[in-house]
Image (tube, rainbow, N blue to C red):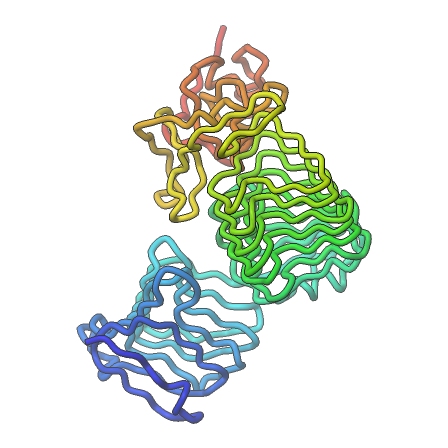
Length: 454
């Protein structure tokens, strides 16, 4: 059977709700109520396996966010689907007993520092994480990003652990670095999420280029990022699925590198009132108010991909737009090295914007390198003067277009110029390369043999 658990409408605190066998395609928010929701027999593994809450493809399947305590219980259910199985915040500390939390390759249980769920006799498939925000300069930890920003001083570095943070963040004029634990790791970026309302991130108090936002997913707001009279740097971020613009700049001076700006209901980027945009190695796709919408502003675009934006890739009024070495759907008049070809994304329907390659592409689902049956022309298509050295061999000694160009996740080149063991790119393989290899924190499976010359 299938059905819906109508607990929220009818239940009172301390009620017990028994769920019959079947698949319940929904998400559940306990909404601060100390309820027991259980299967018909939590001690019978067959009943547990047959009583399923499936949260679909996105979001949180079961949420405890209203301070629920040990009088609140989830028992004898299988929890699957969504991006996170069970989510606890705001001191919520429920009992989760005899459940199967099946989130293979995703987050099974996510808790804040102030939450302490009691997990009893559960089968857990997937990661268990604790959200934590840390100021590296003071070693102080926080539950919320804004709390860390409020107590920080200019120059501090704030690192955000994996998880979903339901809040808005205002930098309040402080030149800080706010980043994920690994900004160049797409899996970490995808699982370090700030989901807010109205304007998720605000730069409106004169922040300058010493203010950095890096390696985060910004989503859920009316605007993902609001920049007024400020000049921050934004790197390796995903700004997606906001209700209006992904980024809105008014008298702003924004530098964006290696960002994905996608699936926003308004423009990917809107620039007004003499704003200045510097866009390098970005992928701007599937936005529904143009990719870039510029009024009385300027933008410089290089090594980037603009594709599937409606009604246009770039809309301009009284603006100067310079585009070089980029893939622009429909073409672009002027500039150097621009192309108009399908970028061949790995899977745009699943928001995977790695470029297909017969030589090798990072597979975000399998967490390994895989080979495709075709190769994107965006590979080796970037500015020949751009730094390509972070791209793994074979890299063609030329940067790729798009958000992963110039990073360790850049899709591989069909050109075999160079040498896999020449890690410092000096055209020689020697003990300097071996030293770099020994210090490396990330070695590619299948590429671990280095033969030294001499």
